[in-house]
Image (cartoon, rainbow, N blue to C red; front, top):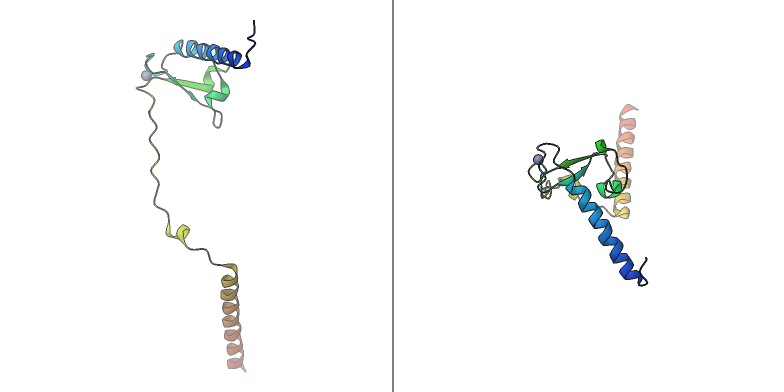
Length: 122
Ligand SMILES: [Zn+2]
């Protein structure tokens, strides 16, 4: 019987789904040592998370995910250390007007050089 109160209905469904998930997870054991302590499921399909695969209510092929205990999964995942930024990336952006001025100067310099070369030839 569905609940009349939608919130109660949702809560019931949430609890039911959690129970199902827990039951599924407790049926698993570590791929490495067959322990059942601190079991975690890891996706083996790049870009597809376990939460999306939902192996607890879909027929997800067993080879799509791996199961590891707390000793064999590296947890908690440490935040990746940021590598120091390269100097090139830190370089200040040049305002377009300034860049245009610089380009004009370079062009002028080049033109003067070619003019000088031509003068030397004649
Ligand atoms: Zn293990």
